[in-house]
Length: 370
Image (cartoon, rainbow, N blue to C red):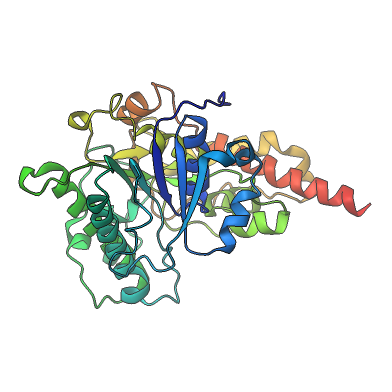
């Protein structure tokens, strides 16, 4: 939903991974709701890419930049968090098959978390940190593709972390083990800081578990880049690409950003009322199975993009139901506390926006060539 820009100063929020999917949307949402933003990036060339974003131009006086090339070295974030009131830690590593499980996945997650906590404590100004987590922490990778699609387990704000994955330590056998293990360990450790008085830091901690993040990006201006960067759910539904392996819910990128930034409000979201984790994903109707949810989204695509399907631009992946869809999402507490009771957009609504974005890029490029 469109928001009216406001220039009320709600303080400085430092956002890591500010040029990523969730990060960029969070930067925009923070600026629109009155925060000043320090974008923390790994590369200097990412600054110019961010500055090209149309939504940021009117806020250029409210934006700062900091470069943290290696977030695993001790003190990595110390200077980047100086003077910040809030932190949103989104930066992370996607578990690519060719990555070293320990050195490129597990240790970077754990060390960057530790460095954020240390830098926040040293700053003397940070009052709240929001950490982006992942549904991977809920499963044991050794279970393989046995979770099914019945969605008969409930994913809500008090779901338990998988104890087996939380106990993983290097050396680890695969990127998947490293990702599940790192996320499960970090979430367990941060939860202990939230709940144990003897270890409580001088700031509050909030954790967010997003579903698959779906939505367009104004930083992408060509159909080829849009296709390359598109989430796996949208690709499976719009192009009949290979079925995704896991689905732990679905969230529109703007809704996901809204959750991260709304969670910073210490008055509206008092620490005493914060659940174990907020769930940034649309709720499913109880009793539905994964195939039902997926085919409903396929119906939306077919109805909305009849012309594109007929021309061959899109091919509806109605049967590409993700292999593992074990959870029925119930995010009503998150919706009530962080979205003012409004509902998250559904899978179908989110993919529809991606389809419109992609087809508009294709049409624009076709018109330019004529």
